[in-house]
Length: 138
Image (cartoon, rainbow, N blue to C red; front, side, top):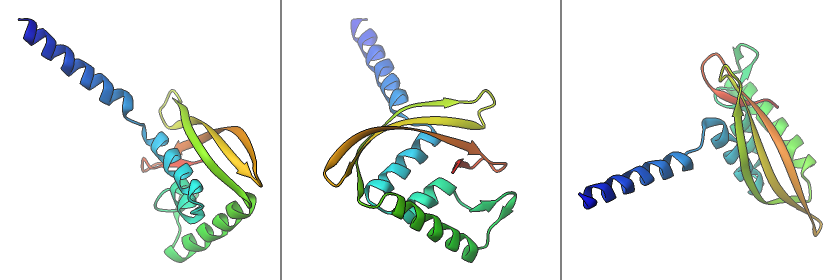
């Protein structure tokens, strides 16, 4: 009997551990965004933020227009982070709206600019579109 109880407790703990370690879709997007920023891969960061397909209002952009928009935004992002490296980050929380169509992900991150280290916080808004695709509100 003790063995059965022990096995049940181990199973419950394993399920709880897995459930706690799972990230929501908005958290995954923000995690992938910051990974790309750490690597200074600004094109990937923008693609992660905008989702796929790239939309402008209710209209899906052509592949060519989407690439132009991605490259322009990546260039702008790169110039705003010039000489800055994100050395570490952590996702602190994710809060969903009541209707579950928007979320706010809080992130703490550390940057290094010309030898100076700075701790930062960010709140990233994400919205789910009509097709159920999460996109950062940039």
